[in-house]
Image (tube, rainbow, N blue to C red; front, side, top):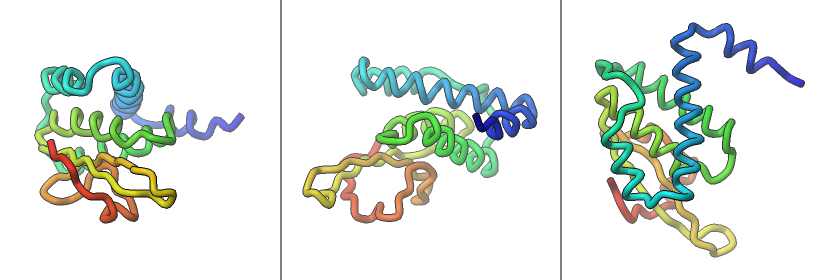
Length: 143
C-alpha cells in the first residue's frame, strides 16, 4: 500500500491538516446531501452556516482553499463532482470574504447527450471547476 499521501499529510502543520479534514468532510457531506435534500434547501443551509471562522480576505488564502478543494474533491470522488466542488468552494471562499458566483452550463457531448457543469468565478476569473473546453458550455444560470 502506498502511504506517501499519509506521510505528506502528517508532515503538514496542524492547521493545514485540520483544514484538509474539514474540506474532506464537507465534500462528503455535501455529496450525500445532494442526493437527499432539495438543492434550494441545501443552498439555504450553506448560506446560513460557516465552515470557517471569519478570516480576513487574502488572495493566497483563496487560492490555497480553491486548490485544496479541487485536489481533495478529485481524490475523494473522481467523477461527477463539479456541483459538489462548486458548492463547497462557494461555502468556504465566501467565508473569507472572497465573493464568488456559481455558474451552471450545459452542452451536447460527443455522443449527443446533454452534459452539465458547474463552476465558480470571482471577478470573471474561474477559481473552481475550470475545464480545457469550458467555453463549449452554454451558461444557463448564475447564482
